[in-house]
Length: 83
Image 1 (tube, helix red, strand yellow):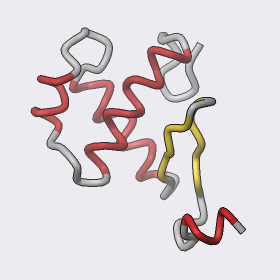
Image 2 (cartoon, rainbow, N blue to C red; image 1 turned 60 degrees about the vertical axis):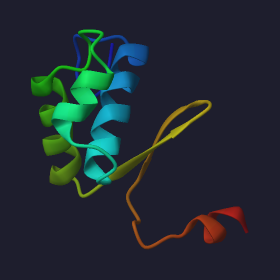
Image 3 (tube, rainbow, N blue to C red; image 1 turned 135 degrees about the vertical axis):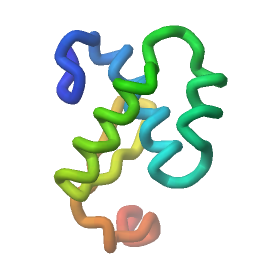
């Protein structure tokens, strides 16, 4: 079961979180994201719910090969992470 959306499995939730992250970072609008991910998992309500939860905790997420990583310290840069 998912963390943000309890009724979804972790992999289904990862899809919604990925879409929400793209929207939050300004890479794509919600409408365009929903067109691209029209599998029925990433619904407008789910994406907006995840965005609200992200904003509530002032977090951002990173999708990695091993899953979803949530960063709370937004001042860190990728180069600092690599050192």
